[in-house]
Amino acid sequence: MASVAKRRNAGSARLTGSAALVAGLVGFVFCVSSGWNGASFSVARPRRSTRVSRCAQLLARRAANLGVDPDEPRNAEDIEVWDQCEQDLALDVRELLISDGNLFFVGPDVESYEEDIRAVADMLNYTAHGWPYDDFLTACECTAKVERVYWVPPLYSIQRWTWKVMYHGLIIFIDEDGWENRDYLARDKIRNLKFPKKKSIFGPESSSNFVSLESNIDAPPGDPIDMWFEADVHVDLKAHPEMPVRDCILASIIDAIMRNPPKWREWFKAAKVRGTIPSDFQTPLQVRREFNSYGISPRLNKLLNA
Image (cartoon, rainbow, N blue to C red; front, side, top):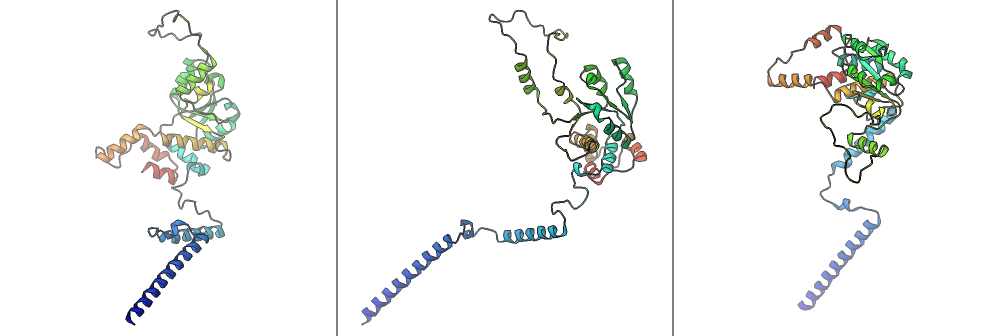
């Protein structure tokens, strides 16, 4: 009788185990058919992710109900230069032009933006002039004057002697077509395709003179666009079509100067860190600017004091 009871208990245990296995398989098939992904069964998945996503969704929903952009920065220090108002742009450009250098505007159709250039000059308290010089000697007179704005016609800005004078100030290229800035290799490749050189079968006919400083008169002229891209500031009007031209000019000046800051700012900052000069030391230009400044925006104040 005892052996019969043991057999019955073993058979019932086998039936219970098989039933549990079948139930587990059925539950697994049901879960897969219900659309569960594999990540739902992962034990290492953080439980906090769903809570954060729900908070983000709730915040976005409340911001949408209030009419507020959730991605908008909280303070005025974190905004982009393209989102600043016209007054802040003018104040920042005036602060960055600490040496009161002249501005030279170049481009293929720069004369059509005379009204906007005059408006920029008025906001900076500069004096706007057309290009009144016809030769290099008389053009050198503008290097002795400061706080001037010149728009240089294309007929003069494609000549080399004008650039020798404009290098004493800030050169601004107004680009209304959105040209691409090519490097030296790309320009040389395009130039060789436009003007291919005939190769002699028996080698060069004459030896090359690398010592002579005389330029090759027979060489074709270069592209004026490549010459204008040598300017300090590139105002791409096509990249910001919603901005007014004067605001785009001011924002491009700030962006170009902050991307390539003057060396003396980095040198003075490193000297203050080393303790070579006091932490509150200022150059004579900075001291003069404090008396004649109307203030700067919070964004530029944060970048200069970083």
